[in-house]
Length: 348
Image (cartoon, rainbow, N blue to C red; front, side):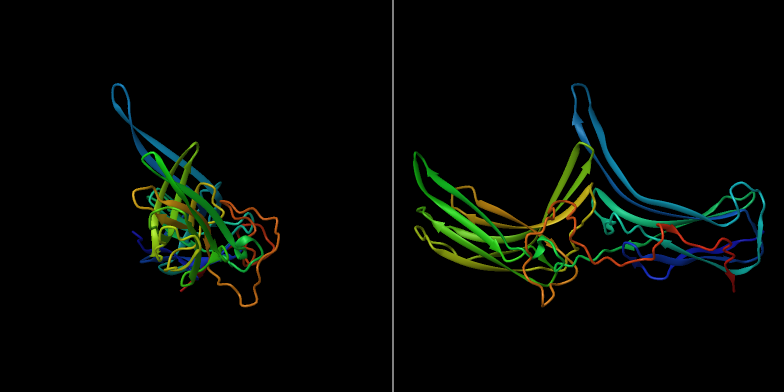
């Protein structure tokens, strides 16, 4: 009886971008000759979200599942045989290789690969070997999609951002003066390793000493139809100099160095991974005064010649449309497998 010693999918490289060719080969290594009815290859890209929640009822507690799936592409191709025929192909013992090329969709842009607690964005290929009177042999191999985010590209990422808020402190029946916070950053896009200068102007009209702080948070939001689930994680933080009671013209600069973190997840409508700077003023015996500055963590640092962006009609939201303009350009063909009409593979 012939045996399949090796059945594998080998990619030419592990990482690809929108519009590029995903290329490689299917390897079939045999100890002796076998009959093959079909050799199929499938490619799939999807975003998937799932979590459960326990709900209390009048009689019993129930577990409810929340699931959402978004399919980006699904392609298949037959390397050996046809679905409508029972003919078999004889493969001799040894190593057989079948090359393939898959063109990824260029538009709309694919989100980068992502794996979280309650969802993922995944891309993979599956190869299936069908033999007469045998259980099919199957192998699945993921590949990574990684799209560059150039923070110098035309759009809002070079624009400064400023947020202001104030809080009045109450003590028993008496109201103290307000604490006013105006937080600024010089642009909205950064890359890991950069240092963000956070400027805080604080007017402390109260009778208490207050303490400013700046922190970067990563927030992941999962959407399953009408339900959302959110998780937030502290990335890094820094404490600023205290502002004394009655000090009304304090200007503080806090330096936040961005550690090695994954870039902002773009172009996915059911999973968002976003970053923000939270600037807070800690007030003794009162709730903190906090403002939020959303930022984008990119992959390509700002070019030396980049200048602040003008008035671009670009939406700055979950899809960040128009930010990633520098996608690799593939051949002018539709997405899917590009192979010869008769892919005989090669033998060694």
